[in-house]
Length: 497
Image (cartoon, rainbow, N blue to C red; front, side, top):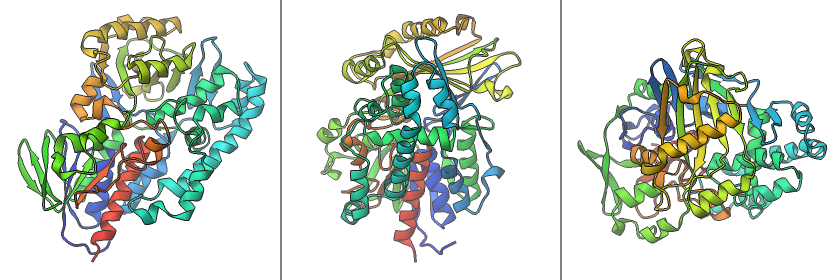
């Protein structure tokens, strides 16, 4: 462990990115305090328990386990001593309008055989697409994901420029998929990866085809005790290393003096700091916590020009029955996939015929529900918060519409559930300060919002840093965890004696 200057860091937000950075910084000798406005750590990832049912509210699909493991390794710990991840052999079941089903596996041949049941042409093209997805992942991993883009030197790196051209930034994911496939089932199943970064496959860059490689060949994992166990493990390690974590502590203002961040004002008082690291939506942080005169390079009108990502409408259902047709992850697709994104990003209203994702934790973890029962996390994509739709008045009606669609797919009896809880984009905005209730910060619709995100280091304010889905390298549970490590490593480098 390097000898470090005795610097104090305040981290705003105890999401996975903030906890990841806290662990790395504390291990290097920084004095770290994490302030979380909610009652528990985890940010958008929370555990809900009700009547013997356990739910994870938030991220449920876990990939790239090495990025979580790196947090522990960098602190001279072993991840398995804190949290255990297990690869799912049957990853995701995809169910299409005509009843066709494709169960994603790590075997290209097996997946292609299932695709052949509705399209021999698409099945024949699937291996070539998988090679392209693997190529895009290698490029992203080597050129973009593992480094911060802090200055001109980074951005003008010839290897970065070459990699940028190789990922065809102006080609959309849907356009790339059309080079390989024709059947709407395949286009929907693989186009859905755009939603993992809060975007539309018809607008997001082709690079997100890499997520097909990430899921099918690198694998999808379940977390023993539920996904929230990752947040618990991070918090436990952070506290072992001397990090102070305060919950129910709402930051009201970032104090800026002489162009530098000097601390934060909270509802419980003032905390002085040498460095402020905001783990939250950067647009919310700038617009709510920093006075406009301190951020001339990011005025409100520029913040307003960013398009927020999609959000989600969640139902948590605990019911005394099991559903053999549900794997750990199951997705039901609509008749017209494109209409969903027109509703979300153009009309800014929830789709009438939505894609429905179900995480059935109880399929692989019997402790998630009582015997003979199911604990279901039901998610549909939804628009970010705007005047076009009010969840306050429409929640129950829309919840019934989703349950009606599920009944059409054979998921019956949900009206008899012992537990039914809903969670809307408006609640997400209130609880986590997510900008306009967006799950992933800004969307990745288009090259500008994908590759030129708000920086990890504030341009106008010395000592103010950012980690989270709005900044580089982007959204998603493993990626924000990586972001926390990258920012921490940069601070260690800058303050090393």
